[in-house]
Length: 395
Ligand SMILES: *Cc1c(COP(=O)(O)O)cnc(C)c1O
Image (cartoon, protein in one colour):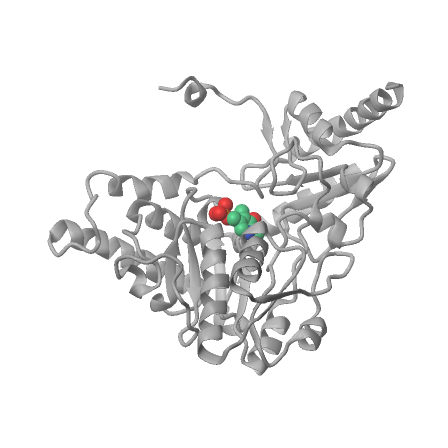
């Protein structure tokens, strides 16, 4: 076995927006499908039938949770692929159908959406327009209404922001798009862990989810695509997933995704309110540090999500110092630390570049205890003070 696989990690994990551990119930449900029940769901024989039954049962579980039809669930390799399939698939289908070549999204999207849109603009001559966001990184329905054109092919707005936690008014934005008959996509990879999402009631045409942000395995996700919304597939091959996503479906991971969705739905309300209380205690604690500011909306944010900028602090040094002290946090941006560029999300909400370099994201999860939050709050101020003293002592 690899040394790294045996090593216990002696640190407090406070980075649940980056990834979550697989829930033991999810792991148990997946295990038989790696070996005993390994068949290809497309095969005619009994091995295939067993795999296919698991695949369709998983599809039904997900459809039930998101209040859609099983035929509207497309399995993908994760949040990134779901976003790419939604953006590329719907934009290209709308161009083919009615020559629409205009894409509306926001400057605060996850790179999976933003870079897929940029790629379409660079290589396929789509026109990309970024919607204005407020100082919390939220989009208003009026901004969407004002920017929609007769040739808009797709609107994509993140449900809840991974970096700053703010939640968008998704139902209202979806209603504006529906009235204009333009497909509406939302990236709900973060939101799905915390909010019940009824795609029909919310009026969402395309919704991306990923398992490893909701206590499921990495490398699996789904795109929910409302009946009647056309998609041109991104990868070609076999006719799996009703011709919308070629390739043998990863049955064990699909079973894991479906169980992660089911488990997330249980006690969701109690868990969200527990996390909200802990989050607010953590926010109050960090805001006691001089020169600390909350980023994102104070109330309309993910229940587990706290994010800040700190004056006179290099965010990467802060993460390293916190890690040494036994706390695993993040700067919030998807990029690895070591990238000295300020986050484009923070710049988009009007934070000056040097302040944006001092960003910190602390995200809580199911295993997070009161004690872990208390220990973080008592350790953080002196770590920040030491870093500032060190920076001031430099020539
Ligand atoms: C993590 C994340 C993604 C990417 O999902 P993967 O499954 O890691 O590819 C996309 N969007 C948001 C908002 C995320 O937090």
